[in-house]
Length: 330
Image 1 (spheres, rainbow, N blue to C red):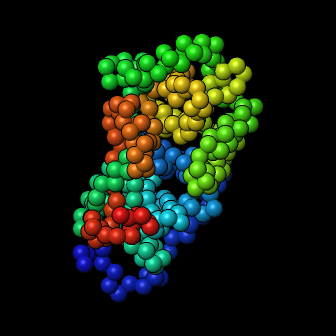
Image 2: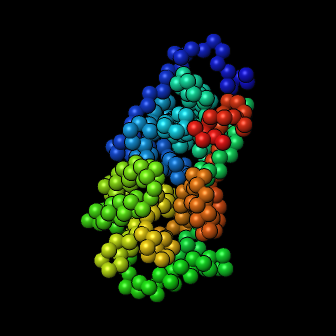
Image 3: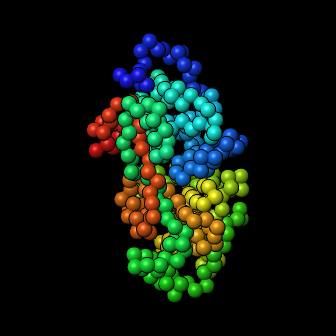
């Protein structure tokens, strides 16, 4: 095995083990101190995503030698880490950090993989340990759009979106766009519950789990630095969306829900949120499609100007491996 990945004569105690902790609201300043200076463009490491989706130990953090580690452990996917994130501008032993993470995963009995690794960190890992393997994971790539494009919907390729909005305006000329306030959270949850009731039993069960994360975002908007928008028709909430400033030039959209009984509701909330809440940014990150074909089609239809590429890093070639994506590898 190449030197940078070698484990000979090492035991579990040769390098002090990483100690992981739950991600709670009070450690936001700590996480931000690692992630924000890197001007991260990938959605994965926004504190909001870690906090709302990482409940019940699904995501945890460790800090060691001025390097941040994030662990993910979902029931459907083997445990893995994101790329180690060093304190920006500080000199650290990055090779040791890579090996510490690999050791931790090996000791946990899983194939060591760093996943959803943003390209600049992929390059940093491979520069440090060139014998490691890398492969793209496009199901995790973020879709990025220009604010101008989403706000104006100009051009032939977005003609269909303009038609949907024009139809909406003709049917609901008295709609209201309102910034989301704490008083509206109850309306948001009522809309979410209605949406769940329209799904099949298996999907509804999954969405009930997702609802906990949505609630966590809605109930902590101020602390998380989130800004939301809503559309009301006849005093009834019909759509809401929630996002945050990922870095000075990019808004990240976390949540978007709408009542599909209102034609054009999704193009409308999308455009109105960008017009009202994203005036001073250039880019809008609408996160990944998770390999869901319907979501992929919808996100591509808005004509992204770029994708935030992410990669899987491993100690051996896993191109044709089974089991690394969970129970549904086929």
